[in-house]
Image 1 (cartoon, rainbow, N blue to C red):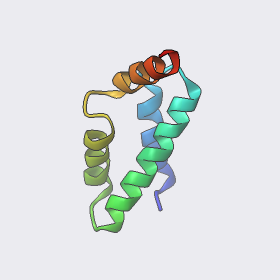
Image 2 (cartoon, rainbow, N blue to C red):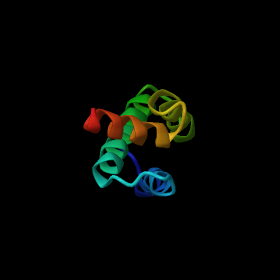
Image 3 (cartoon, rainbow, N blue to C red):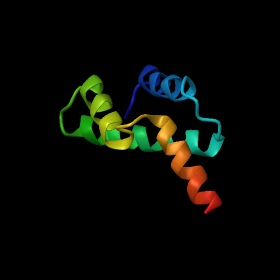
Image 4 (spheres, rainbow, N blue to C red):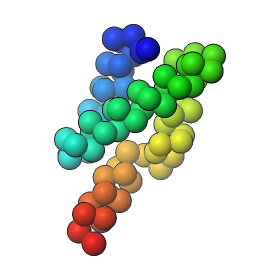
Length: 75
């Protein structure tokens, strides 16, 4: 389980992005938390797990996720 400050770090990083769709932000927060907790369960530190989660979830940045979401919603 993530500590409050770790959860807040993830939340703040998402909030600092250019994402404008609240549902996407919420889904990403949940996805990041689950991924980080899973990696930490394997023995990784928070920092290592968080870095790995970023590479896995959004290797090209959070903006790309929103662009793809908008594309799919409007296709």
